[in-house]
Amino acid sequence: QVQLVESGGGLVQPGGSLRLSCAASGSILDMNVMRWYRQAPGKEREWVATVTSGGTTNYADSVKGRFTISRDNAKNTVYLQMNSLKPEDTAVYYCKGHIRTTNFQYLEVWGQGTLVTVSS
Image (cartoon, rainbow, N blue to C red; front, top):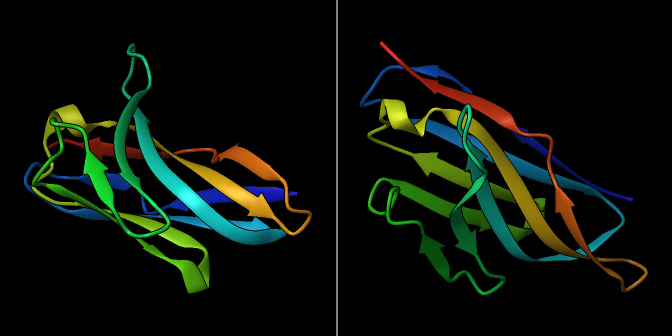
């Protein structure tokens, strides 16, 4: 069994910063591609950022230059540093991982989400 748990969400003023964490636990051999998504009220879930096992990153145009995805493989944790936040960044942020288990299975796992609210 593998779980992803996000943390770090909260209320922040426009222009502020937050750092989200996504910690993987369970029978993990290694984490492969890890992604962040978000879902704003009344909208579909959208992809935000990706980091590969080798550290290559990719971003949605809406967050490029403001958000940074990173990973700490020793801690089985992925981060999303969010700077210059805007009200339109308000959403529930989800982590999704492609994880190899100790049974050599590959699983696609979602976290439960963490709410980010950008408002004055």
